[in-house]
Length: 202
Picture 1 (cartoon, rainbow, N blue to C red):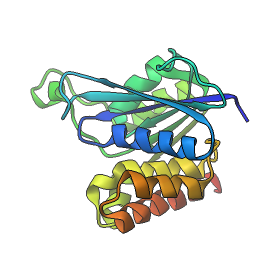
Picture 2 (picture 1 turned 90 degrees about the vertical axis):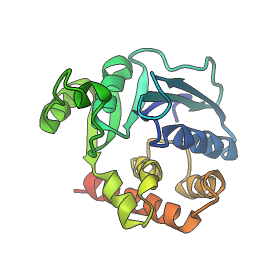
Picture 3 (picture 1 turned 180 degrees about the vertical axis):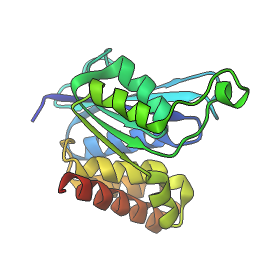
Picture 4 (picture 1 turned 180 degrees about the horizontal axis):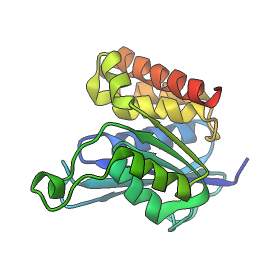
């Protein structure tokens, strides 16, 4: 096991990446590991970019992931995934990305056009070893809880087996981290897990 695994969770305000980072930290502590979780907010807390830094391991030092040192980038929104990967991904990085687009304010007011999704994926594949892109928002909707995209992505992350955390421990952390709508959140988690497992096992 790596002594420390460094993760970046990127999204826009309101997508729940801060909550996802907290759940990962809780699961790490339940596993007997150190965990440090730090959040960096953009222009606004709802609609602006939000990046969560998560470091998990036997001994963790420093609150932030260094540039080009992330083992994992989880992107709840494609453009935010790209921005985070450009700054933090190491060549061996795993990128897990939600396909659902939330156009930033610059696009909404016509400053620039949102790039084609395939172009984003092409760049990401140049930055990382593995890129998995799925519509996790759709999976959350199937679970009956559209706001659970973040939880579906945690399930997907668990399926990659890159975390030094047992999947059942992570499910328990989800229960504690989002005590309301537990069943829907766990369903979203399981749907995310199964979807990524299918991609990996192709």
